[in-house]
Length: 366
Ligand code: UT7
Image (tube, rainbow, N blue to C red; front, side, top):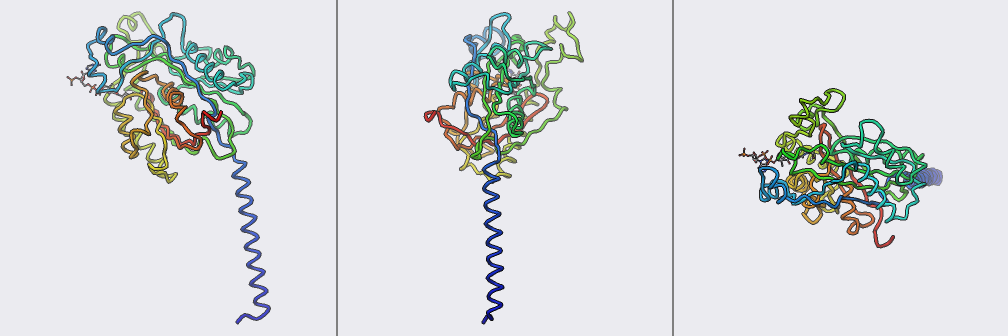
């Protein structure tokens, strides 16, 4: 039996511990509520009207619809035909689509980022021109390039600007006019790529929605296998280079394929493991659309059912920086507030990674 004094000491200690627990919980709740995460609050997209089908490619290079369909999953892609119109044309249209759909006042945009491997020009950023053309007159802007991982890395960049607390609206656009660097005599590349653009608006979220985690990597030893060698600062375009089509993109498909399969599966697995996610609490996989077989391999490794895998490679091919936002735009109506979306990409550089995001809105509520 306790004596009276012992009982008082015990009770005082118990109350002190309870008090500490209460203070900690209140602090945790508050800090959790105040934590800023970057959420996607609107999307938009644009693809040019001209459709380049597999049947058309059969008349241009030694290929056939059956080979392209079974090896890549692509049926057609879009091409921006008009002379003098570059990546900014695609980016501006995608951004305007987002602005129209979400009633956004472009003057409230703080930052415009254009992820692209095919800027309008070598100097004078595509983003700067795009921002001005869409009326984002109070924004600063810049381009970023990490080939097919450009939009994924851009999500990380946009998220960091939002998390800093200094920027409220960051417009990230993924846009590429791949037809400007593709050799339509080279069947190893011309069957894959297409032109397009997609845009996503990032805003602060205090409900714990938006970007949760990221795993991003690069390995420069991979650049030998996928590059547009000439016309940069290391190798000038000469008459001889032009004559043999050396200014176009080159890809050693098999090596890129193997690295893409391994690294996209590895990155998504890491994201799943460290966030204790299983296939049951993932609603969507948004994977770079380079080859349907790579997407399937990634989904299989995650144990995901095909209904959860976003796909539009059949209609657009590989649009490099634009694949992820084009997917978001196509699937926007099916996405629900709170849905877990796993992003994955692999591209030239090499560059790759995965992002875990909680979707922040349901379309029919807006
Ligand atoms: O987005 C950036 C990252 N890029 C990627 O992730 C792309 C990764 N790579 C790929 O998607 C695939 O490697 C390709 C689609 C580019 C090529 O598919 P593959 O299954 O790796 O084909 P392959 O290059 O191993 O060629 C297989 C066969 C060869 O014939 P033989 O030697 O077996 O007789 C090729 O000559 O297919 C032939 N071939 C074609 N046949 C018809 C190659 N390209 C074509 C073609 N049409 N377009």
